[in-house]
Image (cartoon, rainbow, N blue to C red; front, side, top):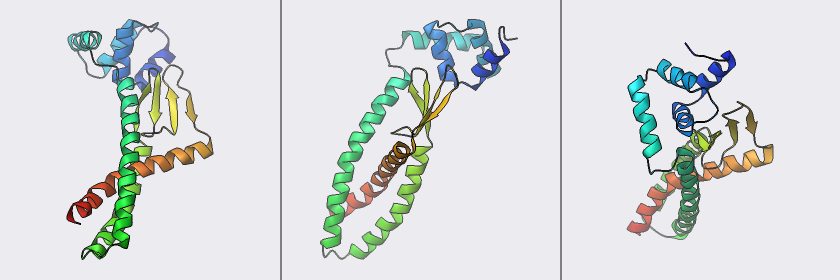
Length: 187
């Protein structure tokens, strides 16, 4: 049985398991018994919870939100480089006289559709964007949820569209790069 406020119980049940383990490690103001009870409801044994808390406390790895921040920065940097390569190579493809030009153009346009789909999936990806924040959209978040209050925020419409366009560009760059790299090597 979970002690304390029923609203706290519902709030804790909605939070990701990794965040609940972080709360146990940080010794925050949350009821430790309530946190452990919610984790037990999810099928974790007492010994397993203790082991996971000990591992997190003794780990040299940064927390998940710090890794996601580094992944966002790395992804944006790589996307910029890959997008420049893709544009230069696609320009050479359009103005070249390669025997595979027609095939490569058809495959490139088919890849565009899959790239936009991948960009859409990136826009709906959920991850821990901050210590107490869950973000939606990778690498640029389009919205977030405060894990302490449960309050959802969505970016203003112009920023939302810009973030979605950047996320779509990441998807396009990922899909077109292998195809254009093959053309670059063959040319």
